[in-house]
Image 1 (cartoon, rainbow, N blue to C red):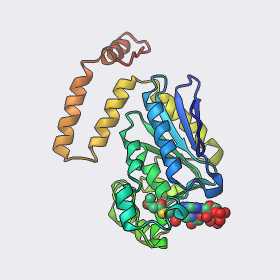
Image 2: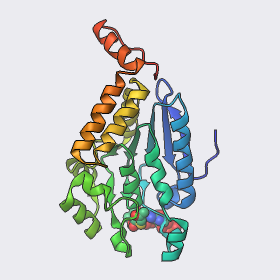
Image 3: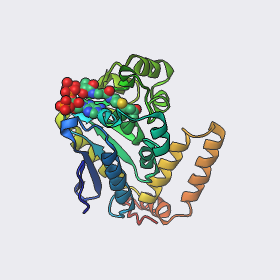
Length: 261
Ligand code: CAA
């Protein structure tokens, strides 16, 4: 497998169908430098293309998921260098992944770290996790979704409070406001995240992909066209072998044997 400097990759789970990506710049609290993001993008793309992988997990370490974009690296950027290089544009590549991505967040998820978690489909957190958009403290604003995705998770008042104050919210607050779907003891987080990934991996990968696309439509369009999209995709599942197998197995009182078709 590919050699990475800033991340580690692994295949985990009883069926070896979960792709695990661990951010690995512990000395910089996993600050998201350009090289790290290039590697992360490649790892996600490779797992997405690998038929043996059902679900992808992105995690950090106990101290930090990621403490943001790399401040030292961008310190001397200029407006024109940002425009010319399309600074941070490669981050959106992660949202092209068809397979579910779960963020398992222990420690700090700040700035770009919080934005990376929000680029994932589900966020699980360890109870010592801390979320925030502290860009305002260093004279800038979120640049990878913090002003757009965060309000969709938590609503305007809380998003404004987080973005304008730079204050951190802990895991339980983050769960209460809907940013995080579950909180676990620190040492249980990865195990529980793998369990969820494996559970998703028992379903038809084809239909999981359609379900992910349909939920994402809710953030892209009006209710009416979102519902139309959903209906077409729901009808479309009736053209798949896996839909037939799923319903047949239910009626025959046996486990389904999905073929990704
Ligand atoms: N970029 C670069 N280096 C970082 C970093 C970052 N975002 N966050 C931490 N580090 C480095 C520190 O510079 C330090 O390095 P040295 O040992 O070489 O000095 C090392 O990681 C350890 O950090 P601290 O000594 O600061 O650790 P701490 O436990 O005292 O504090 C912290 C932890 C509160 C998270 C603090 O590190 C911090 O405030 N980090 C910056 C958080 C931040 O502002 N993030 C937003 C970045 S901007 C952004 O992300 C833009 C965007 O929207 C895309």
